[in-house]
Image (tube, rainbow, N blue to C red):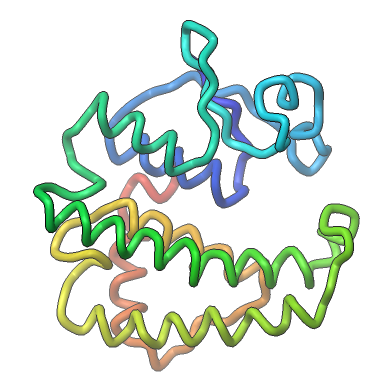
Length: 203
């Protein structure tokens, strides 16, 4: 088994944080995305979408998409549970994971891809207006999240989950996306300080 990894890019990092929370060690194959190595033959034959991370199992089976890879490891190593427990707990984690990914993380990524000069050759066409339009979307979601976090420690409840990992990665990615975290969001800031201080955040 080996994991083709993309360094500080959001989705590869999301898997590494997940694995660190589980204390799972998987051999990494570094891929330099800055040098466009994710478009190399080595990656393309395993993922025609040329995206990372890519998990290659010992029998040659390929898994892509960060959450799918995380789910695979959750089944192999259920403790600690990061996708929830019980019918309701799992549903709540799934609900918030989708919200964090599709509403928040997507907006941050779109801002980065359509505004940052380094992405000009990657995002064709790069539409700065679309990037700017996504900044208030990300901030509006954080305002909603702030009100939710007034009543609980973590995003999907009282225990840390994949939704918190996605949120951590998205907040960290706000800096290169040139979105400032508002100081008035006290509950988001309290949550962020807690999750970013976990040892896994450095993975």
